[in-house]
Amino acid sequence: MNKVVESADAAVADVVSGATIMLGGFGLCGIPENLIAALVRRRVTGLHTISNNMGVDGFGMGLMLEAGMIASHVGSYVGENRRLEALVLKNELDLTLIPQGTLAERIRAGGAGIPAFYVPTGLGTVVAEGKETRKIGERTYVLEQALHADVALIKAWKGDRLGNLVYRKTARNFNPVMATAADLTIAEVEELVEPGELDPDHIITPGIYVNRIVVGAAYRKPIESKFIQSGGAA
Image 1 (cartoon, rainbow, N blue to C red):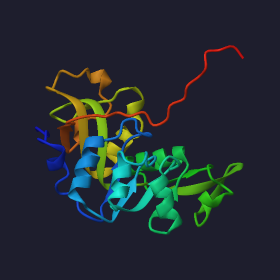
Image 2 (image 1 turned 120 degrees about the vertical axis):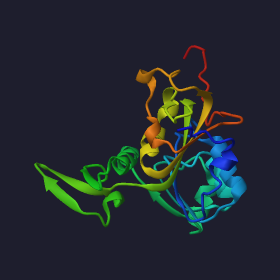
Image 3 (image 1 turned 90 degrees about the vertical axis):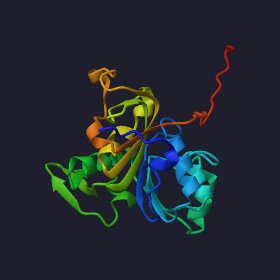
């Protein structure tokens, strides 16, 4: 089955307001920036987003915030986005923070058909408030629910027209698990090849999980934070 879509705009054309959307990436690394830009052009609203973090102002998911598209966000880290901070403090956006490992496992569980699982992380903190706990052996654990989305927007390095995906280094991050945990998975890639050209041992996301694939028109790939170390002696 040829899953190639001609443009990012066409790929997200049927994403509706109020949808729950997973977005891959870690900071600005491996984010589906072309799909995000296309979604911003659609101006859908009331979205419930799930992503490790919200990136930065003026790029990626920051553009969705500026367009007033997000009603709630589930993530692990939001410290680089001033606009998100302002919206949360004014109670204009519902924010749920989850420990990063727990977030990744909740998404993986959603893709694996596991409804819930126990973890020790967050016990005795606000993370555990309102959640079931259970003592297993000598430890007490918190029950965490799986996460699932209507749509997953993910980014890969290479893909073929059947939807098989290969990731590059850190850009692999949350993308593979999100690909499995949504009703509709849309992948953008930097390079599209024919079936058989990808080394089977390098394929991380099999095409069965991908509904649509599009070649990104352009990539900025900015650096989120720069740290410069002096070469002088102490």
